[in-house]
Length: 417
Image 1 (tube, one colour):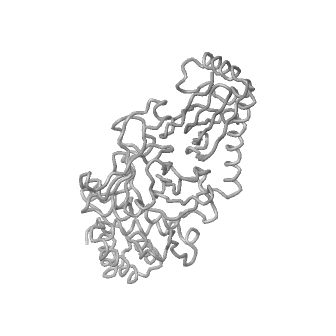
Image 2: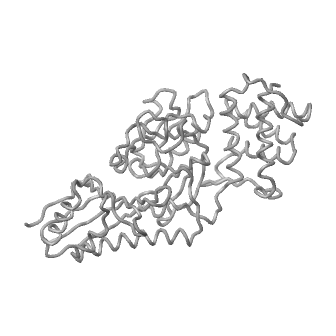
Image 3: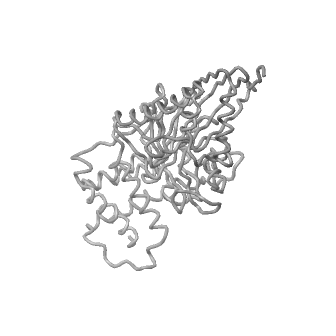
């Protein structure tokens, strides 16, 4: 076997030794999240995880059996072939050291596969606590049946079910992001954006080249906040891989989120165009329920206070909910004067908010809310879908971007003037 194989094998063993019993426990089992686990056979990802556990326990024969199962299911899984080769070599001659490795053999392909082995292993030693909740997803609207959270640091895409507005983890998938990481800002920077997005379209395999595999779900990048920040670029999709490939290295896309074709087909059962949120984070933040509830309650209270001050026509308190960095309104003081005049021009105002969804941007200093807003006054009534972005300033949430969208059934109407 080549030195490349030895290098990969020792990299896996070294990482396993590094995390040791403290991370794993004596014989920690693999936990497979599933919407209905009885309907699924072990996936190649799960079998690779079992292989790595067996390697750690020096059960090389068992590890070889597991990795051969992977290859029988997915002959195009390159990482599995390399691990199998290393295991065969280890059976013939135990590895005690790396030995000299010619520089020419340390190719980019090897580096990519080592990275893939690392993040696949981390899926089993860095799983979220089942009792914890994702801080980035605070509330889902009733029609949002599912949500996705892309964790770039763990190279995992998490699928959640909406249970009475709360996200319940169902499954997670290995994923690929942009070759230059996250925080996309410009066209062609080969980075994946960070933020809250919606699936905007479903593209079938028939409409795409083989490069996108089983299909694609374009995201609404750049969203309203990205545009306000002059971030450019387009074509950020969730898609599959070419038909002759099982998976791609963790950082190898031009900015898209990429999963295996079997995983994309499975996700297609749950993704809703125009409704499914996709939150992309450098690293997902899993917190205890009480801390999660505190975050949700705090943001919901801010939303209710904004609504109450608007209905009370208390313009000083209402305008205090808006940041002086409010985007898209021109000169802020002029906007304030117009807003004050508009509110005081009404004898009464009633505001109804429903179908509320709440998300925290990575870092926790930005929040995104979306809801259906019913507005009534003595002079005007309308119904719209509202998107509001909040920024924490001086310990308080303040609005930095507000956008209303007419509903598709044209329910907006003028009343008496």
